[in-house]
Amino acid sequence: MAYDIENIFAKILREEVPCVKVYEDDNALAFNDINPQAPIHVLVIPKGPYVSIDDFIASASDSEIAGFFRAVGNTARQLGLSTPGYRILVNTGDNGMQEVPHLHVHIMGGRKMGPMVAI
Ligand code: AMP
Image 1 (cartoon, rainbow, N blue to C red):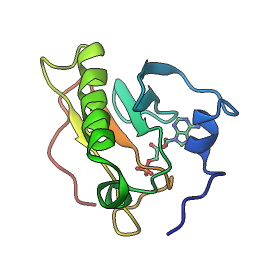
Image 2 (cartoon, rainbow, N blue to C red; image 1 turned 120 degrees about the horizontal axis):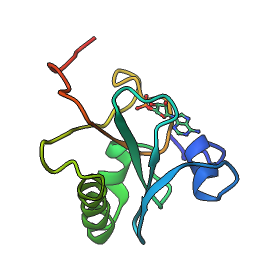
Image 3 (cartoon, protein in one colour; image 1 turned 30 degrees about the vertical axis):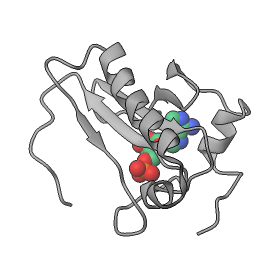
């Protein structure tokens, strides 16, 4: 699947659409999810044009991958979630029910997240 430069997260990266930014570095931008499923629900996206985690792992450089996952962890730490913990989630492709075709890691916390859900 080709990267769609008009997807909503590409527009957020270009500052054409606003977001509530919670973390940014050279590799990643993190912002509040517009429809939160937990008291804290943040999305972390790489700055490069990657459709999904599958595309990212296949195409990104080692430094982009390392930098991005460090940014995910740094975001969670900055949000004060290291203790008592949090959940991360990456929906991927059709069966994963991914809605926005730019890789995003969901960070959810602020309450017990409950059992893993497969529905
Ligand atoms: P997914 O189903 O994993 O692709 O998740 C997409 C997420 O993007 C959903 O949780 C949406 O609430 C969120 N979302 C969509 N548009 C925006 C936006 N403009 N700002 C922040 N979050 C958004």
